[in-house]
Each structure stands twice: as structure tokens, then as C-alpha cells.
Length: 166
Image (cartoon, rainbow, N blue to C red; front, side, top):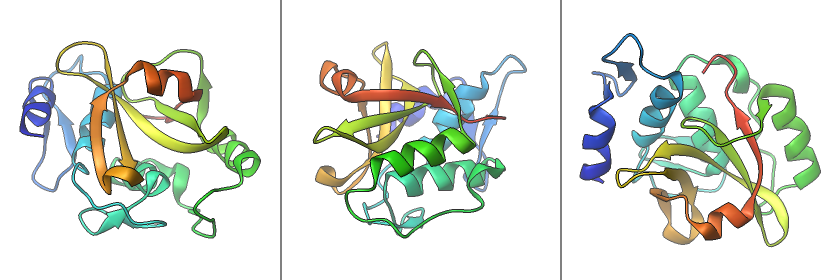
């Protein structure tokens, strides 16, 4: 985790209250989003959780990062969903509050198919060894993790979104 945070700090830093801030005027808004998502690394996985260091799920990570960055998309948060959310409803709600985009960029959000159904979310980051990373609340790992955006995850990618204003 330390290597990833050092890499993040080379382009942006985490401020006093855990808010990602820019060191350069040309700093990418997407990198700010990814750096903010990294401040959640290690947070335990908790279904319907929304609190950094206490617990979150993949939607809770998205809601928390957007809130910390002052983005209004998820003020009307939803927590009445099962361990396997309604894929069609999730896609509809995401399309209402996020901007669909065609390609992966740092700070974008991926919607991933798990067991054949689009139901998992994660942020794209800049992987220290090159390429993209995936920052997400990973139930099997029982915490928020960051790893290479591997071929396995690329195959699961269903749709890409950008935080409007992010």
C-alpha cells in the first residue's frame, strides 16, 4: 500500500483531512478522484457500509469518495439492496447520476459483471508499474484494495462512467 500512496503523492497529495489535493495546476481531475479513492485502501468490506476505516461496499466507496470531493451525485444514497443487487436498477440509477464514457481513464468508474450480472463498481487508477489499476471494495479480500486492471477484470468490464464535475 505504501508504494501506491507514494506514487499517488508524486502527482497529488492527501491533505490534512484525508482529501486529495493537487500539487500542479495541470493536475488531472481523474487523478484527484483516484488519489481520494486510495485514501480508502484497507477499509474493511461491509455490505451497505459507507464509513471510511469502519466499512464499505463497492457502492459505499463510490458514495464516500464523491462526498469527500464535494460532488453531489450521491446525496440521495440508497442502501436497500441485497448482496446481489438488481442489475437493471443499478444501471438505471448510475446512468442518472454519472456520465457514460467510452474508454478507461484515471478516475473513471467501472461497472463490472460478476456471475454474469453487472453489479460491481470500482475506480480506475494509475498503476505504479504502468497501465491502469482498479480500486474497489473487494468482498473476497474483505477490504478496499488496489491492483492491476488485469485481463480477468477487463473481461468483466461492462460499462464505464465518469463522475460529472470530477
